[in-house]
Image 1: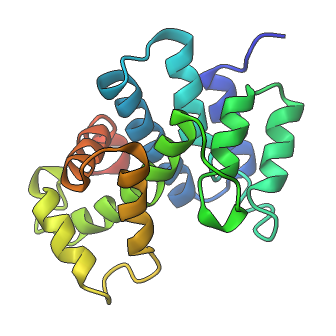
Image 2 (image 1 turned 60 degrees about the vertical axis):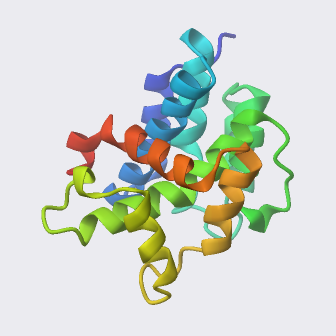
Length: 188
């Protein structure tokens, strides 16, 4: 059996994720992981599609199985024939699972997950709600505001860049660039 396609991944996300907000989050992480794959690591073709699927699907089981997320989703990905590297990236995308991030893909999904959401939150409070108004300095300023986007673990934002071996401000800039590739879909 061949690996599932991006269209297969999108159908799975839509089937398991009723909320438009969580679907958009999947699209945002897909875009930033894909940006890293192409622009930072030189990945293309089927390997790029694998990376993008990991970003798109990292939270796909959250609404169905919040108590066992992402374990239940990983089981479904295995059943559907997704590559082990996608399953491992999904399992390692949060610190709550205790699954170590060994592969570059897993580290990238982890680094892009919370940072994508945080950058989008910063964008929402800009006058024109545009990614063009957001830069690493604006993100750093909002990170210091403990009342802003309170659920986002600041230590995970920093740890993601460290695990990737990318300076923090450069990571923020990379995530912004990745989000710009889907700005119309995200309304940014």
